[in-house]
Image (tube, rainbow, N blue to C red; front, side, top):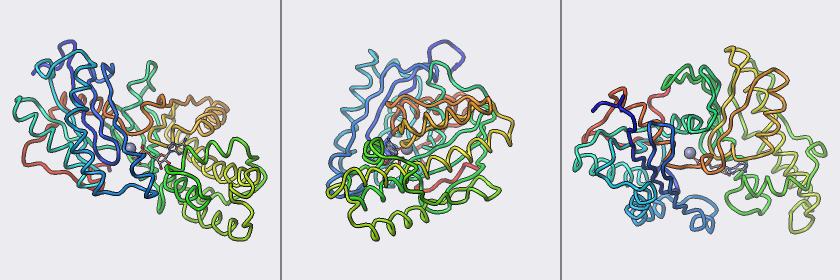
Length: 345
Ligand code: KG4
Ligand code: ZN
């Protein structure tokens, strides 16, 4: 297939965690449709994702979600030039649903299939922006499972510079929210409450800030918040929303401070004029604004996806898949999903 001809349409499929998603993307950059069926309200009852439930719900949703993505793009399977599906990392049972579906479709239709790395795809959500970052740039994938800094030298050329040694940033948001009796997922709940608080009132620790590397650690911060809440039981939002807001704001700023400092240091280290953030936590507007402000002082530009592309979606999977298929990085029926990262260096 000649992928240099105009208008190659890729069908993207995502099912690594608690979102079943499908999208049609043109030439790796133009979203023709993007459908996301979220299971979040089901898992919220349990305070986190229940893998078995996630797999079952993906099974129910996958077919209608793909149909909807094709219909909204105004195309049929006959118009699709390639298929991209998340191969890993993620929950095995959840990944299997989307990846097996994609394998069957690719085989039946004789189409090339890209097995996409979910983290690389989050970085590729930035190429779907009207003004995408120019290579080389620094990227942060910050979600419930990862806090990774990459040096992105070109399409598909990602070098891992640093990562969390324990909890991911989003995981810290979720755990602190749980301690405070806030709803799941914790990120949006903390951000909303933090708006009413003063981030300077309670100073929580900034882990790894003085270390000369690009790694993170958030479990100490989480413990510090737990200790503070234990010693100040009147900090629950039910008891005293005003004071709880200071805890939320102080915690949030501790996370943001470390993320911003390390990202700017990474950009300066690699002489990059742009920083692109992606993943669920990049939906945090206080983070985006603080980073943009601080980076501007170093003449560094910040790129962040719209809300619809921050969390898990299939447009980013199709964007990454398009690059892979063009480079003949395709997989076959014998290929399997993987739960942990295997390829990013
Ligand atoms: O990328 P994502 O949708 O799923 C994966 O983990 O791959 O990210 C979900 C994470 C959750 O931990 C959630 O609490 C966090 O992103 N998150 C936020 C915000 N919105 C979602 N964290 C901070 N502020 C937010 N506004
Ligand atoms: Zn994700």
